[in-house]
Length: 475
Image (spheres, rainbow, N blue to C red):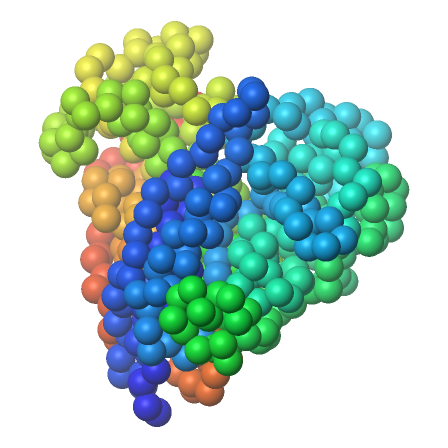
């Protein structure tokens, strides 16, 4: 096949990028067209995404992405924009870390029952899920269309509105068995059914560039925008370089999404109680996983320390710090909002009868060991609840760069870890586009042959990890 290039717009919770991927039978290379920060803005007491600023950066990136055959857009999940009848955005999308939905989940669960909700959507109960955000205040009367963030950007690029399935499945308003919006649940919750647009599958062509977008970017107006796994984790999991189905994965960035890939959802009561989510993957798969707080704990610690902290130096010092001196449950809701993370870690330790970590290297060691334990618990529980055996753990995303975290995860899980690719989301995004436009390559096989991977083998004392897990209730 003749190699072709594809523009992958990949928006993460802390940064965004437009990558140009060249895909051929024996070729998969990435070129960074534009990388930019994603900084939320607090105004009037509410935390918003600067979605217009992000869209401006996307256009900047597309200007540098000449010669591409298609564009695909992915982002984080759960957040959305509302359009009026003319297609105008009704206010900036609110950030999932805002507190507007505090307490809403508990009220909905008390009214409808946890298993009723889980039986429809199969989602982990998280207070910022789309359904609870929508119920936190009346939906404006002028609202006619709800678009998840990647669908909103695709709408601005093409003028075509729709909802991609992998992201729709994170809303709590998607029927994971039927593969459609859960209209009965939507009506029961008193939400307007008409705001939910038609669903799209990864690989569907959304439309071509609007003439004004083509003029602004210098790209041809006949250039297609293609639906990808628009939830960034769905694209990342497609790029896991697995050789068989007996693998666990950790898509590791601001969040760690840890679990297994299945053919059907697991909707048992035990699965619900264990905090597992069933999200749609590319090709109709199910991403059976648990959300773990992820490198957010480290990112916020670095932000608190500001320029005084060098991450490479801290990681080197953390590698030499005493093991298991202090541990936290990374899923504790105290760590969810932005703020002074080292102080919150110290408070958690004091609350649980531990000596708080002393010094920055000790804080980093605490965070990474705790994340490794979170990864271990999620992978082991996913295997047990799904019946899928796990022989290897793949870490993809930014966390694949963190050698200490990768080694600690191998040690904690007692399994080999394969780290990479780092830009898994952009790769998965581009590979969906390539297949939609005629490529016959098998995504994971191509990733294995073309990308740099690092292998970590478990070492150390399994009994020590067992004791550490029991200390924070993750055994």
